[in-house]
Length: 343
Image (cartoon, rainbow, N blue to C red; front, top):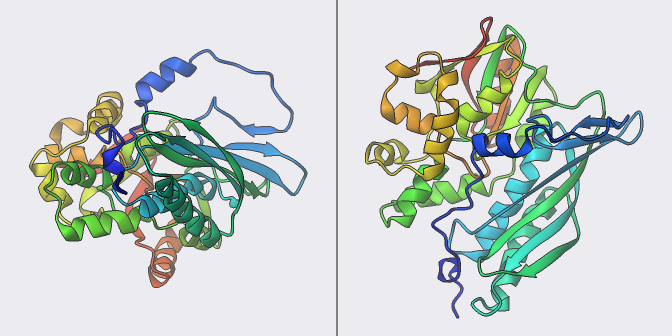
């Protein structure tokens, strides 16, 4: 048995999230009692659940796991941890503890593979100052790995994903294209430079971006993951009071992503995202096909998407860039609801 994760995982599924339309159907009509201290639960599209513990502390909880998207088990562990931690940062919180979740094919994979995955995950948890306190494992034909993360946030400082305001700029803190590069990688087409950038962006924590954003007047925040940039932007405009104008030429892309998109190397998740959310893009009929594919590309361990007061946006980006964060203004809030794309 070797150490390549593709040797014992289906891999073709890439750990794609269930499509947003399917999730909406599954959760539609489900209700629970109105708990006095429950701030955010599954009934909203927020990135994590929030439960108030005291006037000063609220608990932030989230969970994420998926099959490998790279061959190296250590790197996969790093990516899995960075991805799991991201939702806490998106809610304005600080991650505190982690529980590992492991589905392991013991008859196909060597136990050293699991050790390397755990080591990679622990590396990122340590970087995030988050204690690994335990976990749960089961035998499964398909290897999957991730973490349940608990964090804390002041109840009055929670960041929601649907509270943008007028006169704000829209900022994205990582380049796009992980879904497309993953498709190129599985097809044996991805270049070395695109693979290196793909790995580096996915295993980079959103910690620094989140910490810097706390110094500014950020009104809403989410992380860009499986629903793609537009899917998560739609959640920002869900209340219908404020819209977004996104300038596609300002988007930062991973190397060679546009070329791969034009070649038709598009993951299945893109089509699911597009089918459900394209109608929310007001000028979708005039957009270039490659632009649409990039906007709906499902991301793994993507960046933070946030709105901040327009007079603070450039300064915040400069500070993030100085700290190694790929932060750029990609749009602005508008009075009318919905999303408009300017190519």
